[in-house]
Amino acid sequence: MAAIWLPIFLFVAFGALLAGGMLVAGFLIGPHRRNPVKEMPYESGMDPFHDARRRFSVRFHVVAVAFLVFDVELLFLYPWAVASRQAVGIDAAVQQGFVGGRGLVFGGVMLFVALVVLGFVYDWRKGVFRWR
Amino acid sequence: MLELAAIALVKVVILSFGLLTAAAYLVLLERRVAAWVQDRRGPNRVGIPLTSIRLFGLGQPLADGLKFIFKEEFTPSHVDRWMYTLAPISILATALAVFAVIPFGDVLTLGGERTIELVVAPGFDAGAIYVFALSSLAVYGVILGGWASNNKYSLLGGLRSSAQLIAYELPLSLGLLGVVVVTGTLRLDEVIRTQANEGIWFAFAQPLGLIVFVIASFAEAARLPFDLPEAEQELVGGYHTEYSGIRLLMYLVAEFMHMITASFLIVILFLGGWHFWGLTDAAAWGIEGEAVPLWLGVVRIVVLMAKVFVVILFFMLTRWTWPRFRFDQLMNLAWKVMLPLGIANVVMMAVVAEFEVPLTDRLGRGGVIGLTWVGTLLTLIVAALLVPLHSDNRRRSIEPDLFGTS
Image (cartoon, rainbow over all chains, first blue to last red; front, side, top):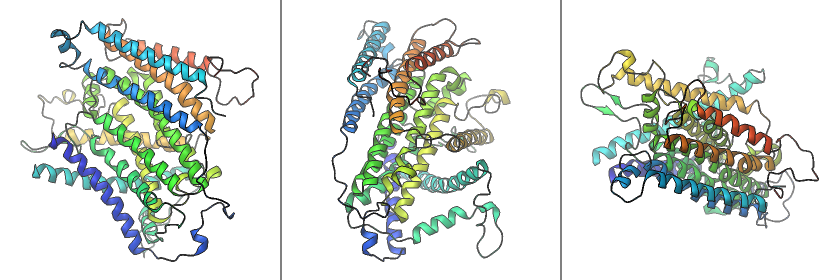
């Protein structure tokens, strides 16, 4: 188990170290000259009139929620997709009597997809995907 | 354990620096392609320093990199210092670490018993899921950078790009799901092996999946026609407006990495990976048994790289051919076109994989006209009839939408 994960942890750690190292290198090598104009937020030469911590359209929030729902629902399909084609998957479960048959599993998944589509249609009718 | 760590570390270091160099030179290539498309010369001056040898501008990426390092490392006073620093690190680290599970070829057999797995984390079962998990983390780099900058352009750019990235995440994972349904594995090298053993690329077996996946990867990589995150004419630089020097470089490199990742995924999932008919089949060369000689392994790597290169060129040419979408068109395309098409593809492939459908086999290939092609055409026609043209901007008194209230 560790043998499989180790290279991945190494890669993530190395990536972060590399990025951090680039930052430090830039900090050490580059010049440091601050001035008040540089400190300002860049707004195409205008003097900024208040900061950017403002309210933004609730649309983004709704889309984020819709994404979360659909993404998690799609994630449920991966285990089925893998299990349906592997020797130790659904076939083995059917043989050992855990499930009635392949058709039942397939029907269940299709029902699940139908429910997802139903939720999608509901969202569409509610105008979640409408951008102005 | 220690040996394993050492091997993995060597691979990680080679791959990281290789990718950074590749990204730098692809920038040069992109500028040359742009110049070629627009009928001008492009960067061709910088060659070997202190001589007059130009070498078609091959010194340009090195000069650019040096310039970025010698620029001032500047943190404006109005930003959220921690998040401002963390954002580029997170986006670059994840953009690099995605390559941990991407195979660069088949297993390479050296003399005798020694073999080299051309992937950093061999035998990792959930490869495809890992790729998607890390590429979703890119959203954090974007939204953190946009929020921490405390600049209106950055905030708007960050919001836009995160909405775009999460919206196209769904079609992307649906496109992948179509492949997983027929292969039954999440390992990218197994996906290639299925295509190689069966001699069919999934691009031909499930064209609808290919269409959905390619369009979604363009959006995920934030390339034109989906480059709204940094629409220069509207948002200056988008979420990295406040970034300069090496941090800007990190953002730009990470963005290029996303394009390289997307190209690799398209090639691996849909274009057969290292497989090419006749050229990479051991049987075609009269080789018996499992072991593949070294030269054939190298041929496979070359074939994979050539395909990736072609897809990257396609990305670049598209950039200089297409205009940018408007934001509402972009979101409409994601939610109202790509998502239904993706679901249609998954259902179609699930039926094909589960039952003995006439005219097609369980991988989706059929006679002259595979069933999946008919399904693709039908779905596209239905989608075209139901969804209004994205180029149609007329105001309507009646909502043109499928379900009345839109």
